[in-house]
Length: 288
Image (cartoon, one colour):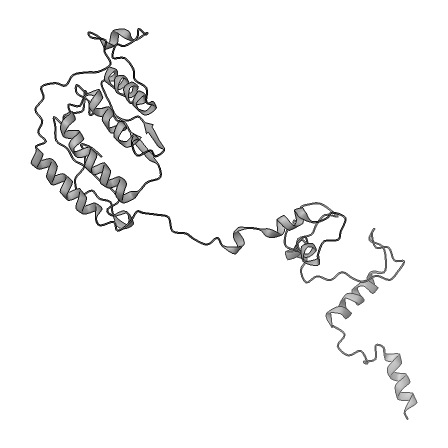
């Protein structure tokens, strides 16, 4: 990041030393900017060994910017794009800051031509916004007489400190290779797609299609004849009816149904106990 932050902004945690920050002072001109950009970016490319580059071409460092305090020209700014392009890597250019609109248009137009390797004229063609580029109507701009506060000693100190930080990275960062979990790929589904539709599926595949008993929710609000709530009807036993007895309309022998329920609950503990007084009398007469 140019013009902001501190040399000590180097990242934190696992990202420590992976951030490179270059704080610069006011009045930075083309010559001083190139003297620090080229060696630092060269060391960064050597250390990180990227396979692609994203280059943000912020134009707030141009001379005459409403907020920026640098004194770069469009040509000096474009040399950054030209230098990165020499590495021959895939790179993407994006916009950025810039608060004097006519100079932002100049810079991005010129740097697009640098990226494409096409030379364009300094005279601007007529367009709907031609009057904004007066009074010279040129592509390139001249620096102002702003004093450059970035002394050679200061720039050398920055380079030395940044090189020390980059040496803390022993090798180019990479992504650790991780094994794919076994359950990440469902091979069974592929087997079913490849299986012959005319042949019977294996038993293990058929078992997977069995729906568990608790797959669907039960409700006692679905009307007569619908599914019944297992929680409500749990433990209740339906009376067994004799064949030919229709109990749909409430008919049948109610007494026999009650006796049947009692027998299932175990109320009749002693099956051998006489059920009437007549049976008792018969037993006593048989044994004088």
